[in-house]
Image 1: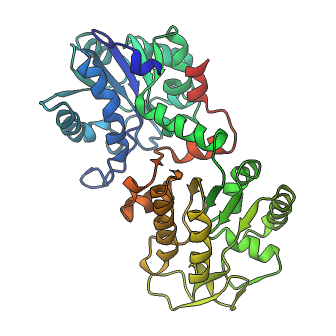
Image 2: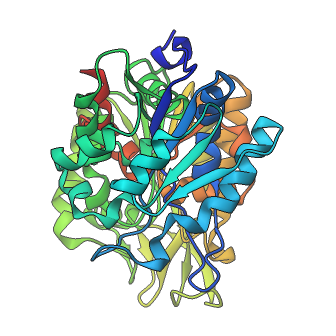
Image 3: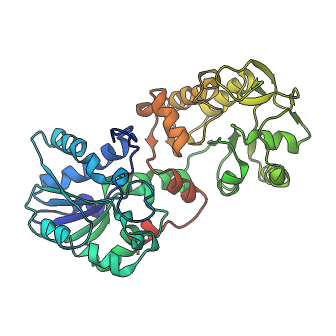
Length: 404
């Protein structure tokens, strides 16, 4: 059992680091996607139901020079209140402090009663947050009796509220929340306890963004599927003609090195045999199908083709463990979303047949949500950058701070 599950929060003030960095409309400040807020609700409600109170701290956006209206967490108070109230089956008022440290935050935290919620203003209004300033972390720590880190999305940052603050709480008074526990458990299972065949689906635009994750997975996966713009660097490295498809010329040697290492380790690298090609990077472009290594001049690959769809889906359906990071094409445009959708269907089918599937990384998570497959995969990660760094084999400061 985990520390959070067994801990009783009765009469305790729980200071929770959440990730409420949600997209806001520039004019109305309406929330575009509340998944990150919803993900934190189980942790918040467990504490409230046990007679504890909750003090929430988060960042929002990238404020440059102190407080700014567009990055204020005040815009999410109403929606947070409705989410917590719905989960608690009664009205719960979410109070707001116009600062995350200082007199108002201290006063409101001190007066918080059992079953009440306080949201602090944006942590990043202070430069000390991103600098990992210990004095700032200590001021925050004084607001609560127990520290709960439930912000996997920021676990790869050595910030004051994620990595430094834990030192001001004794053992047994610092822990992961339910979301963080779930993220770590799912990632650990894929990275260290994966049942074979283990297929990693790696997509996205650039090889340079995914080199470390691919290299780390070469020691673990049985199959690696490579799609998206990055596939064309591999195609060109093998002497293929890719028209005006995306290609990182300075990564051609890297691509060859990856293929060589995979062959030595007996890992199957799957590259798209064909592509949906377009004469322009636009939703209304003319399209055609071409072998991925014989794309005509003036044309570019923007999605995997029908043969690649079938080839990739077959590999996925045979898998017992699946990691998916990155789309197969420009799925935001309808003409180029078939490949990514095919992958989503295959992952869902494999999951239904008993495979464990983890989807991580902003674009693949967006695709799974867009196509309505969120409930048909085993786990959808909330932390894009954090998940990527975890699979690159890096130690995440936010996890290390609690684990020590």
